[in-house]
Image (cartoon, rainbow, N blue to C red; front, side, top):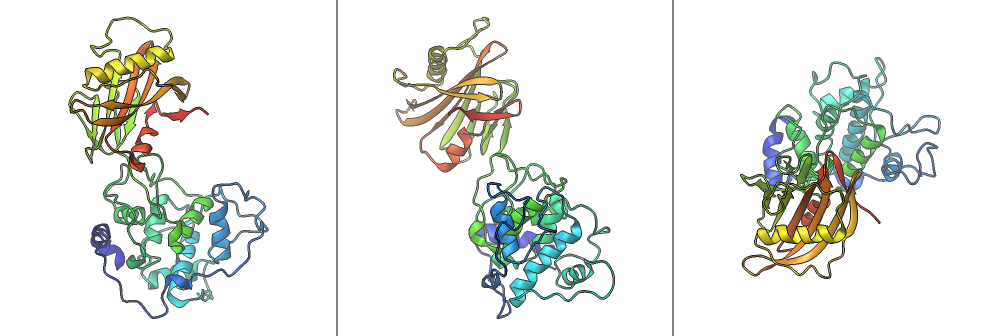
Length: 373
């Protein structure tokens, strides 16, 4: 069964060496074709909703339907319903059309479960209650074999997840993450395996399975607790935290993050700051970076208003030269917490999409950084 060798296939996919699987002549992604026309079919699906295109696709390609003009996008979905969708995908891919004969006895889902077991989408003893709400982990386990591994091309390089243990679901989740079918939540891409899943969410997953162009490429950012320096601060970036707990160097060694609180010797005057001005925030940030070996001209630097929830933040963008004279692009943020000055600075030798995602990701007491417009 595919699930028994999924770890090997994952490694092969990540290395880019996954061999093409020998398939029947009529098994192909081109078998997925529109079989219905969507014209505001579901009254409870707004055209502006994030899931509108996914639901439209699943309806047009014959994977999901609603009831009496309603889709119920926020409702949970059962294990049986999830298996039915995965079975339809496998059946269409394999045969070119959807044809799973209805069972003459048993619940409505009997024929789908029998098909899934016969085609090794799930083991016979995988689930004890098909009417139970499906969890996100269940979905990964059910959907990973809807298509052959050769159709799950690796777009991402995800080797671990912060909230998925090495259970029977582990390699299924990783494979779907690397294929860009699952993306997780937040900058560290948490999967929340035990949460139930909505019909809207599974529509998005099903769409990415059958339409590879909708799969998503992304970078997972590791969470670093910077509470030792700034209480409640979390910085998200791939890299390692130094021993003093105030600097993170990226895995690529191209950029870094410097964190400071009022306890730093540069500013430890014992004073409580009632209000941080734009000018003072800029000057303190420059003094911090100067103490770290960076020089810059901040005379023309203008602050950008931002916030961590209810905590006001000043953001600054400027160039800084390191001790070797090499210029670095710098994004710095300054704010007050309990009357104490705090700052977070990101400096890079080379701008990139990953760096831009990192500078937008820090959080204070769970509130993410929001730039005001």
